[in-house]
Image 1 (tube, one colour):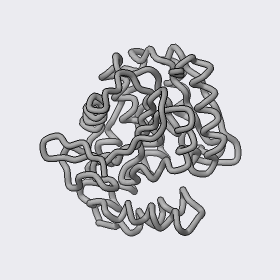
Image 2: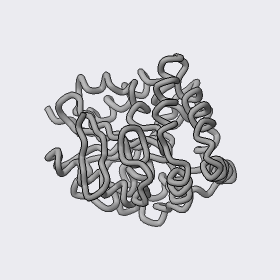
Image 3: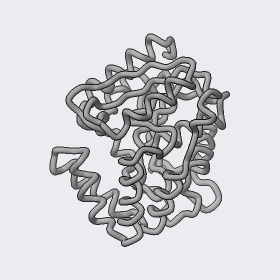
Length: 259
């Protein structure tokens, strides 16, 4: 199995396909299985899947599991893979890592895709969701996490079991720190520094995220927003075909495709 190792941490990763590289960044503890339905995009692009720290097959119990360090480790992995410029795709809290990557490594960023993304945790509902996550992680309720997240994203029992197995490998104390760091993350005041094309994808039923459209619209120069019908937050897993087509069409339209 392929690993990227730096000092005392190891990141598990997979690559699939050729062409424009896209690195896919998942929410805490869910691992690369989050993007299992994005695999068909490998017919057109080079997909780079990664298990971030304390997720899947990567290092657990790491104090380096924070937004800034995860962005840096992702950049180091891409350097190892000889990827000069990449599309960073972040889903949910993984979108914070994508934003930090684009801000810290503009020369390595060709474009950014955020699915259910937010520049800071400022709304009442999202704050409560993070606070619940911090409480549950502090109580070591990893089995509860695995039950809720796997069923929220997948309908197949096999897919639920595989995701639950990934999540149960997580460390509660590390997960608590990840949620605390994510809750404190803010990019709003730096968004104007992002000059690359940006695509925002939201589910029409995702009431948590609507308030975050305004700061993105105010600060990003090259922005497209797509609202996906009949889904809440889980666009990559509940509406995968539409999600994949939107991504492909946007990359073609923005001429970000390596032929």
